[in-house]
Image (cartoon, rainbow, N blue to C red; front, side, top):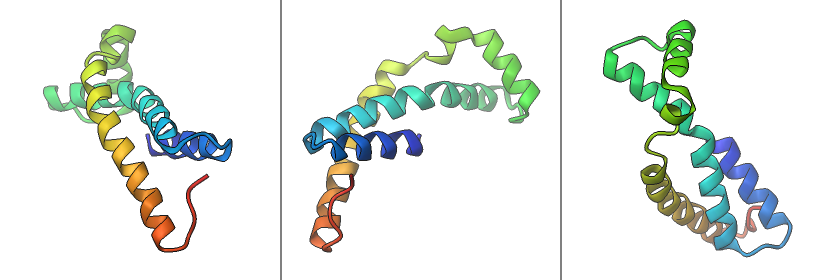
Length: 103
């Protein structure tokens, strides 16, 4: 999640793109990238299962692509707001400390 978020944001900022659209793109891509993992963790927690490879692979096979991306719209809504604010505030703090913006 964090790797996709920061890589996307820094890359887009380095192209000279505006801050908020870069943060928005980073939020969307990182949320989509981490959704299957979050679905598997939720599934394991529901059933009290351990996060073992075989159990997670069985859950992934049972859920299929649709199940792994279940709840994506609400996650995108929530995470987009959080990540955009986080990245914009982070840039403001970095600037105030004289460190320069990301990207």
